Image (cartoon, rainbow, N blue to C red; front, side, top):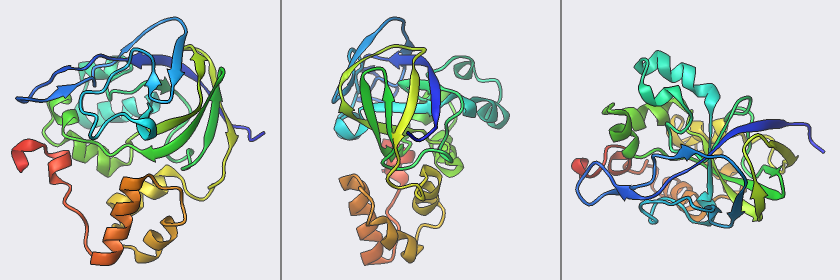
Length: 232
């Protein structure tokens, strides 16, 4: 077995509620809870998503955000009250010791009876701007590479906070989430890198994005996602 494990310090979930802009709904305000929880193919039982066009689903069943990033964010935006406790970024898993430089696309982890597979990094959206009260927070998250990541659920079961998340399989060891974020957001038209990425088990939206960049030689417009409806 590959030796890489961390304790999941907190599990978090939230209910979908009206959000900051007219017509918007979000469950980004997730709170820690105690006791075991069932995890099925759509995520933690009792957790919700506000807009299923962009959030949730089998490829975004569980969101993991490293607590390790919180001190860095305090340096960037100050002592924000959201950064005092886990859940600032709408995560389901909070832990120390695992980040985008160590996690690879396709990694499989076991926690309790559950097996999870890293499906994609998070693409931050404008709801982070409103949540933090920082106009360009989503852009900052994207540029930093400190986005967190999503799992799909390979094997369902029960888990609890305090259990160990252990790596059991790593089919793509050269493709860290940091490398993928660099391809998506920094070296955006590195054609060799984009072609190489097509060999990966990309989620459909990412495969379409990579193919479109190769075909057009141009980068898609990020503004609606990271600036929000007001930018349309």
